[in-house]
Length: 582
Image 1 (tube, rainbow, N blue to C red):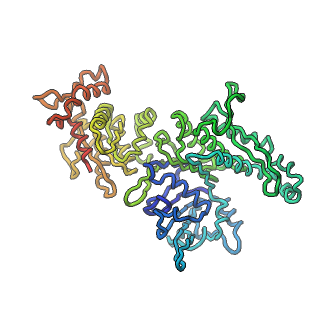
Image 2: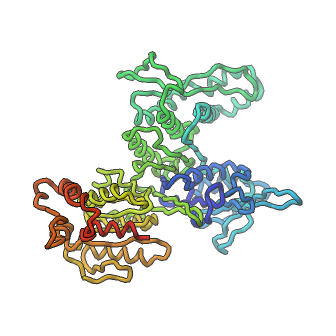
Image 3: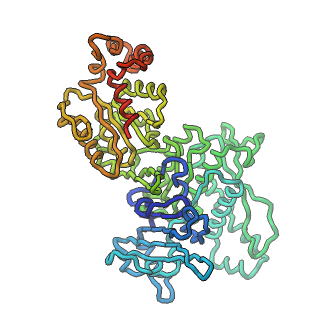
Protein backbone atom coordinates (compact mmCIF):
# COMPACT_ATOMS: atom_id res chain seq x y z
CA UNK A 1 0.00 0.00 0.00
CA UNK A 2 1.28 3.42 -0.91
CA UNK A 3 0.15 6.77 0.46
CA UNK A 4 -1.11 9.02 -2.36
CA UNK A 5 -2.20 11.99 -0.26
CA UNK A 6 -2.62 12.91 3.39
CA UNK A 7 -4.61 15.90 4.61
CA UNK A 8 -4.98 17.41 8.08
CA UNK A 9 -7.18 20.12 9.55
CA UNK A 10 -7.60 21.57 13.05
CA UNK A 11 -4.97 19.25 14.49
CA UNK A 12 -2.79 21.20 16.91
CA UNK A 13 -1.40 24.19 14.96
CA UNK A 14 -2.65 23.06 11.52
CA UNK A 15 -5.87 24.71 10.38
CA UNK A 16 -7.37 26.48 7.41
CA UNK A 17 -9.06 23.57 5.64
CA UNK A 18 -8.14 20.17 4.26
CA UNK A 19 -7.60 21.54 0.75
CA UNK A 20 -4.97 23.95 2.06
CA UNK A 21 -3.22 21.34 4.19
CA UNK A 22 -2.84 18.23 2.05
CA UNK A 23 0.40 16.61 0.94
CA UNK A 24 0.51 14.80 -2.39
CA UNK A 25 2.72 11.70 -2.69
CA UNK A 26 1.34 10.54 -6.04
CA UNK A 27 4.54 11.03 -8.02
CA UNK A 28 6.93 11.38 -5.08
CA UNK A 29 8.67 8.97 -2.77
CA UNK A 30 10.48 11.74 -0.89
CA UNK A 31 8.86 14.97 0.29
CA UNK A 32 10.58 17.82 2.14
CA UNK A 33 8.52 20.38 4.06
CA UNK A 34 10.16 23.71 4.81
CA UNK A 35 8.98 27.04 6.17
CA UNK A 36 9.25 29.41 9.10
CA UNK A 37 9.37 28.26 12.72
CA UNK A 38 6.03 27.18 14.19
CA UNK A 39 4.39 26.94 10.76
CA UNK A 40 3.33 23.35 11.44
CA UNK A 41 6.00 21.32 9.64
CA UNK A 42 6.74 18.86 12.45
CA UNK A 43 3.05 18.72 13.32
CA UNK A 44 2.37 17.24 9.89
CA UNK A 45 4.80 14.42 10.64
CA UNK A 46 3.24 13.76 14.01
CA UNK A 47 -0.26 13.91 12.51
CA UNK A 48 0.27 10.76 10.47
CA UNK A 49 1.84 8.99 13.45
CA UNK A 50 -1.20 10.05 15.50
CA UNK A 51 -3.60 8.84 12.80
CA UNK A 52 -1.88 5.49 12.35
CA UNK A 53 -1.86 4.73 16.08
CA UNK A 54 -5.57 5.61 16.24
CA UNK A 55 -5.03 7.72 19.33
CA UNK A 56 -7.84 9.53 21.08
CA UNK A 57 -7.25 13.29 20.99
CA UNK A 58 -7.03 15.44 24.09
CA UNK A 59 -8.01 19.09 24.33
CA UNK A 60 -4.44 20.05 23.47
CA UNK A 61 -4.71 18.24 20.14
CA UNK A 62 -7.48 20.55 18.92
CA UNK A 63 -6.50 23.79 17.20
CA UNK A 64 -6.25 26.47 19.89
CA UNK A 65 -7.83 23.92 22.29
CA UNK A 66 -11.20 24.57 20.66
CA UNK A 67 -13.07 21.26 20.83
CA UNK A 68 -15.95 22.77 18.86
CA UNK A 69 -13.73 22.61 15.77
CA UNK A 70 -13.50 19.13 14.26
CA UNK A 71 -10.15 17.41 13.79
CA UNK A 72 -10.13 15.90 10.30
CA UNK A 73 -7.73 13.46 8.65
CA UNK A 74 -8.07 12.47 5.00
CA UNK A 75 -5.98 9.68 3.54
CA UNK A 76 -5.84 8.35 -0.01
CA UNK A 77 -3.92 5.14 -0.64
CA UNK A 78 -3.04 3.01 -3.63
CA UNK A 79 -3.72 -0.70 -3.24
CA UNK A 80 -1.96 -3.45 -5.14
CA UNK A 81 -3.38 -6.93 -5.73
CA UNK A 82 -1.75 -8.32 -2.59
CA UNK A 83 -3.24 -5.53 -0.46
CA UNK A 84 -6.75 -6.16 -1.76
CA UNK A 85 -6.49 -9.92 -1.26
CA UNK A 86 -5.05 -9.43 2.23
CA UNK A 87 -7.83 -7.05 3.29
CA UNK A 88 -10.58 -9.23 1.86
CA UNK A 89 -9.16 -12.35 3.49
CA UNK A 90 -9.26 -10.67 6.91
CA UNK A 91 -12.81 -9.38 6.59
CA UNK A 92 -15.22 -10.71 9.20
CA UNK A 93 -18.92 -10.76 9.99
CA UNK A 94 -20.06 -9.56 6.58
CA UNK A 95 -17.72 -6.57 6.60
CA UNK A 96 -15.50 -6.55 3.55
CA UNK A 97 -13.69 -4.22 1.20
CA UNK A 98 -16.35 -3.08 -1.26
CA UNK A 99 -15.31 -2.68 -4.90
CA UNK A 100 -17.48 0.41 -5.33
CA UNK A 101 -15.03 2.39 -3.21
CA UNK A 102 -11.96 1.38 -5.21
CA UNK A 103 -11.23 3.45 -8.29
CA UNK A 104 -8.06 2.79 -10.26
CA UNK A 105 -6.79 0.79 -7.26
CA UNK A 106 -7.24 3.77 -4.98
CA UNK A 107 -9.17 4.15 -1.76
CA UNK A 108 -9.88 7.41 0.06
CA UNK A 109 -10.94 7.53 3.70
CA UNK A 110 -11.68 10.23 6.26
CA UNK A 111 -11.61 10.23 10.05
CA UNK A 112 -13.27 13.07 11.95
CA UNK A 113 -13.08 13.77 15.66
CA UNK A 114 -15.89 15.93 16.98
CA UNK A 115 -17.19 16.98 20.37
CA UNK A 116 -20.59 15.61 21.44
CA UNK A 117 -22.62 17.28 24.17
CA UNK A 118 -23.69 14.60 26.64
CA UNK A 119 -25.68 16.36 29.33
CA UNK A 120 -23.26 18.63 31.11
CA UNK A 121 -20.25 16.78 29.78
CA UNK A 122 -18.52 16.81 26.42
CA UNK A 123 -17.39 13.56 24.89
CA UNK A 124 -15.42 12.94 21.72
CA UNK A 125 -16.75 10.87 18.86
CA UNK A 126 -14.81 9.40 15.96
CA UNK A 127 -16.57 9.30 12.59
CA UNK A 128 -15.07 7.22 9.79
CA UNK A 129 -16.13 7.70 6.18
CA UNK A 130 -15.12 6.45 2.74
CA UNK A 131 -15.22 8.47 -0.47
CA UNK A 132 -17.56 7.09 -3.13
CA UNK A 133 -15.97 7.82 -6.54
CA UNK A 134 -19.28 7.23 -8.32
CA UNK A 135 -21.45 9.61 -6.30
CA UNK A 136 -18.54 11.91 -5.32
CA UNK A 137 -19.88 11.83 -1.76
CA UNK A 138 -18.56 10.57 1.56
CA UNK A 139 -20.36 7.43 2.75
CA UNK A 140 -20.45 6.44 6.40
CA UNK A 141 -18.49 3.27 5.75
CA UNK A 142 -15.47 2.40 7.84
CA UNK A 143 -12.35 1.96 5.72
CA UNK A 144 -14.07 1.01 2.47
CA UNK A 145 -16.50 -1.31 4.21
CA UNK A 146 -13.88 -3.27 6.15
CA UNK A 147 -15.25 -1.91 9.40
CA UNK A 148 -12.35 -2.59 11.73
CA UNK A 149 -9.35 -0.28 11.71
CA UNK A 150 -7.17 -3.12 12.96
CA UNK A 151 -7.81 -4.94 9.69
CA UNK A 152 -7.19 -1.90 7.48
CA UNK A 153 -4.05 -1.06 9.46
CA UNK A 154 -2.41 -4.33 8.39
CA UNK A 155 -1.55 -2.89 4.97
CA UNK A 156 -1.21 0.78 5.94
CA UNK A 157 2.37 2.16 5.73
CA UNK A 158 3.94 1.98 9.19
CA UNK A 159 5.21 5.34 10.51
CA UNK A 160 8.85 5.58 11.54
CA UNK A 161 9.11 8.82 13.50
CA UNK A 162 12.63 10.15 14.06
CA UNK A 163 12.38 13.01 16.52
CA UNK A 164 14.70 15.99 16.64
CA UNK A 165 16.07 15.05 20.08
CA UNK A 166 15.71 11.30 20.73
CA UNK A 167 16.62 9.98 24.17
CA UNK A 168 18.87 6.99 24.85
CA UNK A 169 15.82 4.99 25.88
CA UNK A 170 14.04 5.80 22.61
CA UNK A 171 17.08 4.75 20.58
CA UNK A 172 17.37 1.43 22.42
CA UNK A 173 13.63 0.84 22.14
CA UNK A 174 13.91 1.21 18.38
CA UNK A 175 16.66 -1.40 18.22
CA UNK A 176 14.80 -3.86 20.45
CA UNK A 177 11.53 -3.42 18.60
CA UNK A 178 13.21 -4.23 15.28
CA UNK A 179 15.21 -7.15 16.66
CA UNK A 180 12.14 -8.56 18.37
CA UNK A 181 10.27 -8.46 15.07
CA UNK A 182 13.23 -10.10 13.35
CA UNK A 183 13.45 -12.76 16.04
CA UNK A 184 9.76 -13.62 15.77
CA UNK A 185 10.13 -14.14 12.04
CA UNK A 186 12.67 -16.88 12.67
CA UNK A 187 10.40 -18.83 15.00
CA UNK A 188 8.65 -21.67 13.23
CA UNK A 189 5.06 -22.62 14.02
CA UNK A 190 6.08 -25.70 15.99
CA UNK A 191 8.54 -23.61 17.97
CA UNK A 192 5.77 -21.16 18.80
CA UNK A 193 3.83 -24.12 20.17
CA UNK A 194 6.84 -25.28 22.15
CA UNK A 195 7.08 -21.84 23.68
CA UNK A 196 3.50 -21.95 24.86
CA UNK A 197 3.85 -25.41 26.36
CA UNK A 198 7.23 -25.36 28.01
CA UNK A 199 8.99 -22.47 29.72
CA UNK A 200 11.93 -24.79 30.33
CA UNK A 201 13.11 -24.52 26.73
CA UNK A 202 13.04 -20.71 26.64
CA UNK A 203 16.82 -20.48 26.59
CA UNK A 204 16.99 -22.71 23.53
CA UNK A 205 14.29 -20.67 21.83
CA UNK A 206 16.12 -17.47 22.69
CA UNK A 207 19.18 -18.70 20.86
CA UNK A 208 17.06 -19.51 17.83
CA UNK A 209 15.31 -16.15 17.96
CA UNK A 210 18.53 -14.19 18.30
CA UNK A 211 20.73 -16.31 16.07
CA UNK A 212 24.17 -14.64 16.03
CA UNK A 213 24.42 -15.16 12.28
CA UNK A 214 21.11 -13.40 11.65
CA UNK A 215 22.02 -10.61 14.05
CA UNK A 216 25.35 -10.24 12.29
CA UNK A 217 23.67 -9.86 8.90
CA UNK A 218 21.39 -7.13 10.23
CA UNK A 219 24.23 -5.34 12.02
CA UNK A 220 26.32 -5.46 8.85
CA UNK A 221 23.47 -3.95 6.81
CA UNK A 222 23.02 -1.16 9.37
CA UNK A 223 26.72 -0.35 9.40
CA UNK A 224 26.91 -0.24 5.61
CA UNK A 225 24.43 2.64 5.70
CA UNK A 226 25.93 4.28 8.79
CA UNK A 227 29.47 4.26 7.36
CA UNK A 228 28.34 6.37 4.45
CA UNK A 229 28.16 9.17 7.00
CA UNK A 230 30.59 8.19 9.78
CA UNK A 231 33.37 6.03 8.36
CA UNK A 232 35.36 5.89 11.60
CA UNK A 233 32.53 4.68 13.85
CA UNK A 234 30.73 1.35 13.94
CA UNK A 235 27.45 0.38 15.58
CA UNK A 236 27.42 -2.66 17.81
CA UNK A 237 24.55 -4.44 19.59
CA UNK A 238 25.44 -5.47 23.11
CA UNK A 239 23.17 -7.79 25.05
CA UNK A 240 22.04 -6.28 28.34
CA UNK A 241 21.82 -8.20 31.61
CA UNK A 242 19.31 -11.02 31.33
CA UNK A 243 16.19 -10.73 33.42
CA UNK A 244 14.43 -13.66 35.00
CA UNK A 245 12.39 -15.51 32.41
CA UNK A 246 8.63 -15.05 32.46
CA UNK A 247 5.97 -15.89 29.92
CA UNK A 248 5.76 -12.20 29.01
CA UNK A 249 9.49 -11.48 28.98
CA UNK A 250 11.12 -13.98 26.70
CA UNK A 251 13.19 -11.81 24.43
CA UNK A 252 16.66 -10.53 25.01
CA UNK A 253 17.28 -6.83 25.44
CA UNK A 254 19.93 -4.95 23.50
CA UNK A 255 21.39 -1.47 23.62
CA UNK A 256 23.15 0.57 20.95
CA UNK A 257 26.90 1.06 21.35
CA UNK A 258 29.13 3.25 19.20
CA UNK A 259 32.59 1.80 18.60
CA UNK A 260 35.40 4.00 17.34
CA UNK A 261 37.39 2.29 14.60
CA UNK A 262 41.09 2.21 13.87
CA UNK A 263 42.39 2.59 10.32
CA UNK A 264 42.25 -1.20 9.84
CA UNK A 265 38.57 -1.08 11.00
CA UNK A 266 39.38 -2.88 14.25
CA UNK A 267 37.65 -1.51 17.35
CA UNK A 268 39.60 0.99 19.43
CA UNK A 269 38.97 -0.25 22.97
CA UNK A 270 40.59 2.84 24.50
CA UNK A 271 37.75 5.18 23.52
CA UNK A 272 34.45 5.07 25.48
CA UNK A 273 31.50 3.65 23.55
CA UNK A 274 28.54 4.96 25.55
CA UNK A 275 25.51 6.87 24.29
CA UNK A 276 26.63 10.03 26.08
CA UNK A 277 30.09 9.85 24.48
CA UNK A 278 28.88 10.36 20.92
CA UNK A 279 27.40 13.37 19.14
CA UNK A 280 23.68 13.83 18.53
CA UNK A 281 24.26 13.84 14.78
CA UNK A 282 25.74 10.34 14.90
CA UNK A 283 22.92 9.14 17.16
CA UNK A 284 20.18 10.37 14.82
CA UNK A 285 22.00 8.96 11.80
CA UNK A 286 22.25 5.62 13.61
CA UNK A 287 18.50 5.68 14.15
CA UNK A 288 17.98 6.34 10.46
CA UNK A 289 20.30 3.46 9.56
CA UNK A 290 18.47 1.15 11.98
CA UNK A 291 15.15 2.03 10.41
CA UNK A 292 16.41 1.71 6.84
CA UNK A 293 17.06 -1.96 7.46
CA UNK A 294 13.70 -2.49 9.18
CA UNK A 295 12.25 -4.27 6.15
CA UNK A 296 15.20 -6.69 6.12
CA UNK A 297 14.71 -7.39 9.83
CA UNK A 298 11.00 -8.04 9.30
CA UNK A 299 11.50 -10.14 6.19
CA UNK A 300 9.55 -7.79 3.92
CA UNK A 301 9.95 -8.58 0.24
CA UNK A 302 11.13 -5.61 -1.81
CA UNK A 303 8.94 -5.01 -4.85
CA UNK A 304 8.80 -2.00 -7.16
CA UNK A 305 6.34 0.69 -5.99
CA UNK A 306 5.27 -1.34 -2.95
CA UNK A 307 5.59 0.78 0.18
CA UNK A 308 5.51 -0.68 3.69
CA UNK A 309 6.86 2.21 5.78
CA UNK A 310 6.82 5.98 5.87
CA UNK A 311 9.81 7.63 7.55
CA UNK A 312 8.85 10.84 9.35
CA UNK A 313 12.18 12.61 9.78
CA UNK A 314 12.20 15.77 11.90
CA UNK A 315 15.03 18.14 10.92
CA UNK A 316 17.44 15.49 9.58
CA UNK A 317 20.22 18.08 9.29
CA UNK A 318 20.45 18.68 13.06
CA UNK A 319 23.94 18.38 14.61
CA UNK A 320 25.60 17.41 11.32
CA UNK A 321 28.64 18.90 9.63
CA UNK A 322 27.70 20.46 6.24
CA UNK A 323 29.48 17.66 4.36
CA UNK A 324 27.56 15.03 6.31
CA UNK A 325 24.34 16.95 5.73
CA UNK A 326 24.92 16.63 2.01
CA UNK A 327 25.69 12.92 2.37
CA UNK A 328 22.55 12.36 4.41
CA UNK A 329 20.48 14.17 1.79
CA UNK A 330 21.81 11.82 -0.87
CA UNK A 331 21.10 8.82 1.34
CA UNK A 332 17.51 9.93 1.95
CA UNK A 333 16.84 10.15 -1.77
CA UNK A 334 18.57 6.83 -2.45
CA UNK A 335 16.61 4.78 0.06
CA UNK A 336 13.21 6.05 -1.05
CA UNK A 337 13.39 5.00 -4.69
CA UNK A 338 10.76 2.81 -6.31
CA UNK A 339 12.52 -0.45 -5.40
CA UNK A 340 12.53 0.13 -1.63
CA UNK A 341 9.53 -0.10 0.74
CA UNK A 342 10.02 3.42 2.11
CA UNK A 343 8.29 6.73 1.61
CA UNK A 344 9.98 9.65 3.37
CA UNK A 345 8.51 12.88 4.74
CA UNK A 346 11.04 15.33 6.20
CA UNK A 347 10.58 18.65 7.99
CA UNK A 348 13.68 20.76 7.50
CA UNK A 349 15.19 24.20 8.08
CA UNK A 350 18.30 23.59 6.00
CA UNK A 351 18.63 24.82 2.40
CA UNK A 352 21.30 22.16 1.94
CA UNK A 353 18.66 19.47 2.25
CA UNK A 354 16.84 20.82 -0.82
CA UNK A 355 17.55 19.39 -4.26
CA UNK A 356 15.08 20.63 -6.87
CA UNK A 357 16.37 18.34 -9.62
CA UNK A 358 15.83 14.97 -7.88
CA UNK A 359 13.36 12.62 -9.54
CA UNK A 360 10.40 11.17 -7.62
CA UNK A 361 10.64 13.96 -5.06
CA UNK A 362 8.80 17.14 -4.19
CA UNK A 363 9.17 20.23 -2.04
CA UNK A 364 6.53 21.83 0.15
CA UNK A 365 6.57 25.35 1.50
CA UNK A 366 4.31 25.63 4.53
CA UNK A 367 3.11 29.06 5.59
CA UNK A 368 1.05 30.35 8.47
CA UNK A 369 -0.94 33.57 8.40
CA UNK A 370 -4.14 35.09 9.76
CA UNK A 371 -6.30 32.68 7.72
CA UNK A 372 -4.51 29.54 8.88
CA UNK A 373 -1.84 27.25 7.53
CA UNK A 374 -1.35 26.38 3.88
CA UNK A 375 1.04 24.21 1.88
CA UNK A 376 2.43 24.98 -1.57
CA UNK A 377 3.92 21.96 -3.28
CA UNK A 378 6.29 21.61 -6.23
CA UNK A 379 6.58 18.19 -7.84
CA UNK A 380 8.78 16.72 -10.53
CA UNK A 381 6.05 17.17 -13.15
CA UNK A 382 5.91 20.91 -12.44
CA UNK A 383 9.66 21.24 -12.89
CA UNK A 384 9.42 19.39 -16.20
CA UNK A 385 6.61 21.64 -17.39
CA UNK A 386 8.50 24.81 -16.52
CA UNK A 387 11.63 23.81 -18.35
CA UNK A 388 13.60 21.29 -16.33
CA UNK A 389 14.35 19.29 -19.44
CA UNK A 390 15.49 22.23 -21.53
CA UNK A 391 16.80 24.71 -18.95
CA UNK A 392 20.38 25.73 -19.67
CA UNK A 393 23.31 24.08 -17.96
CA UNK A 394 24.00 27.32 -16.10
CA UNK A 395 20.97 26.67 -13.89
CA UNK A 396 22.28 23.32 -12.71
CA UNK A 397 25.75 24.72 -12.24
CA UNK A 398 24.58 27.64 -10.14
CA UNK A 399 22.57 25.37 -7.84
CA UNK A 400 25.40 22.85 -7.53
CA UNK A 401 28.01 25.57 -6.99
CA UNK A 402 25.90 27.54 -4.52
CA UNK A 403 23.43 25.24 -2.72
CA UNK A 404 22.51 28.12 -0.42
CA UNK A 405 20.57 29.65 -3.29
CA UNK A 406 17.87 27.29 -2.02
CA UNK A 407 17.80 29.44 1.12
CA UNK A 408 15.60 31.75 -0.94
CA UNK A 409 12.79 29.19 -0.62
CA UNK A 410 12.62 30.09 3.08
CA UNK A 411 12.22 33.80 2.32
CA UNK A 412 8.99 35.77 2.13
CA UNK A 413 10.25 38.13 -0.59
CA UNK A 414 13.08 37.80 -3.13
CA UNK A 415 14.76 39.86 -5.86
CA UNK A 416 15.83 38.02 -9.01
CA UNK A 417 18.86 39.44 -10.81
CA UNK A 418 20.83 38.04 -13.70
CA UNK A 419 24.41 38.48 -12.50
CA UNK A 420 27.07 39.33 -9.94
CA UNK A 421 27.05 43.10 -10.42
CA UNK A 422 23.43 43.62 -9.40
CA UNK A 423 23.64 41.01 -6.63
CA UNK A 424 26.68 42.66 -5.01
CA UNK A 425 25.22 46.17 -5.14
CA UNK A 426 21.78 45.16 -3.86
CA UNK A 427 23.18 43.15 -0.97
CA UNK A 428 25.47 46.02 -0.03
CA UNK A 429 22.59 48.51 -0.05
CA UNK A 430 20.33 46.25 2.01
CA UNK A 431 23.09 45.67 4.53
CA UNK A 432 23.71 49.41 4.81
CA UNK A 433 20.09 50.60 4.89
CA UNK A 434 18.79 47.70 7.02
CA UNK A 435 15.16 47.87 5.81
CA UNK A 436 12.35 46.30 7.82
CA UNK A 437 11.67 43.95 4.93
CA UNK A 438 13.51 40.64 4.83
CA UNK A 439 14.70 40.57 1.21
CA UNK A 440 16.72 37.75 -0.33
CA UNK A 441 18.82 38.37 -3.45
CA UNK A 442 18.84 35.51 -5.97
CA UNK A 443 21.67 35.61 -8.49
CA UNK A 444 20.19 33.61 -11.36
CA UNK A 445 23.50 33.48 -13.20
CA UNK A 446 22.02 34.51 -16.53
CA UNK A 447 18.87 36.24 -17.75
CA UNK A 448 17.79 32.96 -19.37
CA UNK A 449 17.32 31.34 -15.95
CA UNK A 450 15.00 34.04 -14.58
CA UNK A 451 11.72 32.57 -15.99
CA UNK A 452 12.49 29.25 -14.31
CA UNK A 453 12.90 30.89 -10.91
CA UNK A 454 9.80 33.03 -11.50
CA UNK A 455 7.68 29.91 -11.91
CA UNK A 456 9.12 28.28 -8.80
CA UNK A 457 8.59 31.33 -6.58
CA UNK A 458 5.06 31.95 -7.84
CA UNK A 459 4.24 28.28 -7.25
CA UNK A 460 5.52 28.61 -3.68
CA UNK A 461 3.64 31.92 -3.32
CA UNK A 462 6.87 33.75 -2.53
CA UNK A 463 6.72 37.38 -3.63
CA UNK A 464 9.42 38.12 -6.19
CA UNK A 465 10.81 41.15 -8.03
CA UNK A 466 12.98 41.13 -11.15
CA UNK A 467 15.79 43.47 -12.21
CA UNK A 468 17.29 42.54 -15.57
CA UNK A 469 18.75 43.97 -18.78
CA UNK A 470 16.52 44.97 -21.69
CA UNK A 471 19.22 43.95 -24.19
CA UNK A 472 17.75 46.26 -26.82
CA UNK A 473 14.27 44.71 -26.67
CA UNK A 474 12.42 47.41 -24.69
CA UNK A 475 9.25 48.64 -26.44
CA UNK A 476 8.93 51.82 -24.32
CA UNK A 477 5.48 50.62 -23.28
CA UNK A 478 4.19 49.90 -19.77
CA UNK A 479 1.25 47.82 -18.61
CA UNK A 480 -1.40 48.70 -16.03
CA UNK A 481 0.90 47.57 -13.22
CA UNK A 482 3.70 49.92 -14.28
CA UNK A 483 5.88 47.11 -15.59
CA UNK A 484 7.74 47.41 -18.92
CA UNK A 485 6.27 45.39 -21.79
CA UNK A 486 8.41 43.03 -23.90
CA UNK A 487 7.32 41.18 -27.02
CA UNK A 488 10.48 39.33 -28.04
CA UNK A 489 13.35 37.13 -26.82
CA UNK A 490 13.78 35.97 -23.21
CA UNK A 491 12.43 39.27 -21.89
CA UNK A 492 9.09 38.31 -23.42
CA UNK A 493 9.01 35.16 -21.26
CA UNK A 494 9.98 37.15 -18.16
CA UNK A 495 7.27 39.72 -18.78
CA UNK A 496 4.68 37.07 -19.67
CA UNK A 497 5.16 35.23 -16.39
CA UNK A 498 5.16 38.53 -14.51
CA UNK A 499 1.88 39.61 -16.12
CA UNK A 500 0.33 36.24 -15.32
CA UNK A 501 1.35 36.50 -11.67
CA UNK A 502 0.15 40.12 -11.41
CA UNK A 503 -3.25 39.06 -12.73
CA UNK A 504 -3.56 36.32 -10.10
CA UNK A 505 -5.81 37.61 -7.32
CA UNK A 506 -4.43 35.14 -4.75
CA UNK A 507 -0.80 36.10 -5.29
CA UNK A 508 0.96 39.28 -4.18
CA UNK A 509 3.36 39.93 -7.05
CA UNK A 510 6.31 42.31 -7.05
CA UNK A 511 7.66 44.69 -9.69
CA UNK A 512 9.72 44.31 -12.88
CA UNK A 513 12.49 46.81 -13.60
CA UNK A 514 15.03 46.82 -16.45
CA UNK A 515 18.31 48.42 -17.48
CA UNK A 516 18.35 49.84 -21.00
CA UNK A 517 20.21 48.22 -22.69
CA UNK A 518 22.26 46.67 -19.88
CA UNK A 519 23.60 47.58 -16.45
CA UNK A 520 26.84 49.08 -17.79
CA UNK A 521 25.07 51.25 -20.38
CA UNK A 522 22.43 52.40 -17.89
CA UNK A 523 25.02 53.45 -15.30
CA UNK A 524 27.83 54.67 -17.52
CA UNK A 525 26.22 58.03 -18.35
CA UNK A 526 23.84 58.79 -15.50
CA UNK A 527 24.47 62.52 -15.67
CA UNK A 528 26.24 64.57 -18.30
CA UNK A 529 26.88 67.41 -15.86
CA UNK A 530 27.82 65.50 -12.69
CA UNK A 531 30.01 62.44 -13.24
CA UNK A 532 30.16 61.37 -9.59
CA UNK A 533 27.52 58.62 -10.04
CA UNK A 534 28.82 57.20 -13.30
CA UNK A 535 29.97 53.59 -13.43
CA UNK A 536 33.45 53.09 -14.87
CA UNK A 537 33.42 49.77 -16.66
CA UNK A 538 36.81 50.08 -18.31
CA UNK A 539 38.35 47.72 -15.78
CA UNK A 540 35.80 44.92 -16.22
CA UNK A 541 37.89 42.97 -18.69
CA UNK A 542 40.91 43.26 -16.42
CA UNK A 543 39.40 42.90 -12.94
CA UNK A 544 36.03 41.23 -13.58
CA UNK A 545 32.49 42.33 -12.79
CA UNK A 546 32.42 41.40 -9.06
CA UNK A 547 35.51 43.51 -8.33
CA UNK A 548 34.22 46.47 -10.35
CA UNK A 549 30.81 46.27 -8.67
CA UNK A 550 32.46 46.33 -5.25
CA UNK A 551 34.58 49.31 -6.28
CA UNK A 552 31.48 51.10 -7.59
CA UNK A 553 29.77 50.64 -4.24
CA UNK A 554 32.67 51.56 -1.98
CA UNK A 555 34.17 54.29 -4.13
CA UNK A 556 31.06 55.93 -5.59
CA UNK A 557 27.68 55.00 -4.14
CA UNK A 558 28.34 54.44 -0.43
CA UNK A 559 29.50 58.00 0.24
CA UNK A 560 26.67 59.55 -1.79
CA UNK A 561 23.62 57.71 -0.47
CA UNK A 562 22.39 60.87 1.26
CA UNK A 563 22.66 62.91 -1.94
CA UNK A 564 19.44 64.38 -3.31
CA UNK A 565 20.38 63.02 -6.73
CA UNK A 566 21.15 59.45 -5.68
CA UNK A 567 17.90 58.22 -7.21
CA UNK A 568 19.36 58.96 -10.62
CA UNK A 569 21.29 55.73 -10.12
CA UNK A 570 18.91 53.14 -11.53
CA UNK A 571 19.90 50.27 -9.26
CA UNK A 572 19.41 52.46 -6.17
CA UNK A 573 16.06 53.75 -7.40
CA UNK A 574 14.88 50.21 -8.13
CA UNK A 575 15.80 48.81 -4.72
CA UNK A 576 14.04 51.72 -3.02
CA UNK A 577 10.90 51.00 -5.05
CA UNK A 578 11.08 47.35 -4.05
CA UNK A 579 11.49 48.20 -0.36
CA UNK A 580 8.49 50.54 -0.51
CA UNK A 581 6.33 48.10 -2.51
CA UNK A 582 3.46 46.63 -0.50
